[in-house]
Length: 314
Image (tube, rainbow, N blue to C red; front, top):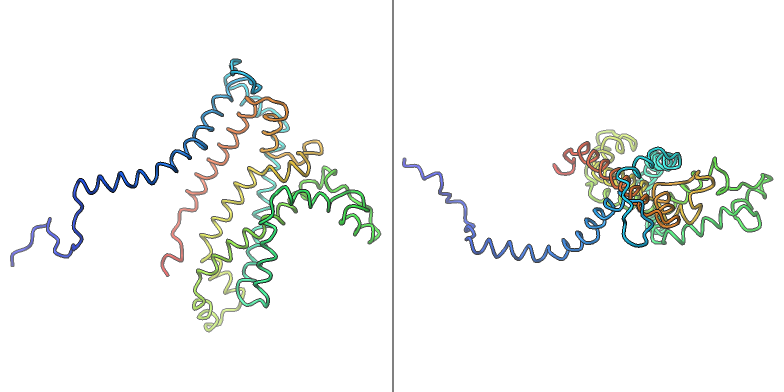
């Protein structure tokens, strides 16, 4: 039997696009992408390179940058104890988020995502804080943390229980924990919503089959639900870490990094030097360090989590 040439394919019913048609499609795609590309270059890439440029100068933001100092700003930052404290606080917030906030959000999502009575009401209640702006959340928690028992709800409760009032935002030992409680209240619902979305993609037939085979609720969660939520958990962890590194508004309004830099974060440290002390060259160098931290973490995290998703085979 005579064989068909290798180049022919009788099953390929889709006609190949001609050269002019391909060029026309490429131009059309480029035109659609051009506005987004221009915005990305203008508001992301350009500021990064300008920050790199200004980080090489001792510049107060007024007039042209002329006092070139090279890498001195970057060296000074690494020897500043306040910057090291801000870096340590960012690490603590990351640990608290991954160890407390995300597991609680996951557990609550599992409860309100299945058969809990009134789950729609609970979803709304827990997600409402995320809708509020960080400024409103910070002011609200400042009122709750007020050291005066006549004004602060928490201290009023403590006095009612016969305990001494606590300076929640004025005590170096507990201020970071107090700030983290406000952060958790603010973003808890967001991560819960992510997990709820992931739960919707898990077929109920899998859990029902496991129950028929004798699996209890804990086995169902650890061997079926948790592995199938892998991609959602990766996304939640990624956003939580980057958000912890860049945390600014809530911390600045509540404590301004105090007392005595006890709640200082990388963003408040950058803002303090760049816009309070008008050392924009130094502040630009801090911004570059923050950018490098986020970039390095993103690259390493994407490399470590590059695994096939269990749901792709379903």
